[in-house]
Length: 504
Image 1: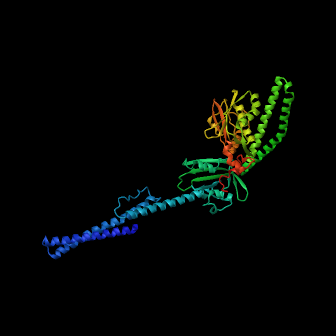
Image 2: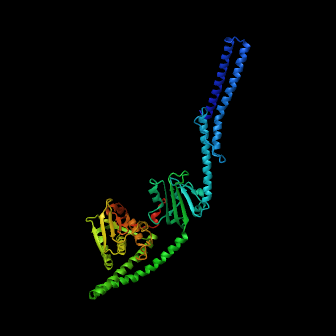
Image 3: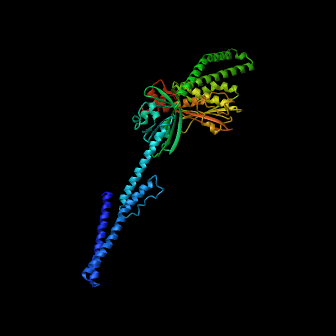
């Protein structure tokens, strides 16, 4: 039975019961006046009729109050949500005797309708505002379905909003990031751990269906329990022209640096020749000069390599081939190659390598760049300390962990966060120590491609420790079988590797 029918039945029962009671009361009055008070029949009827009319009138008034009370509560609910009302109280339905279910259902519907209307008006206002913002904006729900877009992103995608809303974001946006720190990975990491969060990325590529590419800075806001189901709001700021100029500058620098490789190689060759042919005939002072020339040429070679490597990484042309290698032997070979540079700076490299380490899967050329950059940084930033320690061991996760420790001035906590960013130089050291700010960026890119992690521990006045991990070769056997006998080929960062929001 619906609420209205139930209400009608309750009122009908109430009227019938009241009239019946009035009639019974009149009948009792008639017999009392006739038999007890010895009144005649006409007098008894008159008294009974008058009583019936009075009680019926009172009963009808009472019934009207009971029947109209629900209507009054419904009106109070409407008035309560009216924008012109001056804070009226909400209706109290709990004390209602008749029609409680009907009033409760109607008031609930009124509130829901008002809430939906207000929400729609709010959404319309939001849409008007967001369409005036000079940035591309879209929102997705918890399932990754797009539920709002503004005009600018429609223009970029060359699609109408009806062709975008309701689709999975992976099917609409072909985004490419410069590292594994992507929108998808960020969302996976926070969805079950944080109610809200905010994140931003620079130099994100949006690959369009027509073959063109736009460059953006991207910001994202996550709200797990957003009432409008806007779980993630994504904002794209167009920066194509700015990043194109930077690319041109980087390409020019890379081209200029590349031209240095031939004369630098010749210079190093002549220095090595002089050391072998006439080194024994030189005085101690001249041999020192020769060592410094050799160390300086090695350092310049590292700078050239870093600049060229960054260009390859950014253009996704830096490829690594992982093969099985003895880690202890590899580390010692790399240290031997940089030992002269350390001695010229009056530094001693001490090694502590755990025996019987498992073989590792590495690209020897790129791992050389990793260790050389870390040791070279330790030489530069160790201050008056003369000792640099290189350790290698098997950690609890079963990965081969290597660290480079110096006892220099260390770094404050606010510096550590930006160390692996391209071109980052701390304002405390950039005026005193030479460098390009590329070494640690390259280190992280290469180790990421190896499937390892990079970390740093540093404290002011206590020195710094940089470490990284690489996988034992046994962990790569399945990938090796898929790759064949030529080794496991990977790319260090780059666009192709990071289409993380693009379903292929």
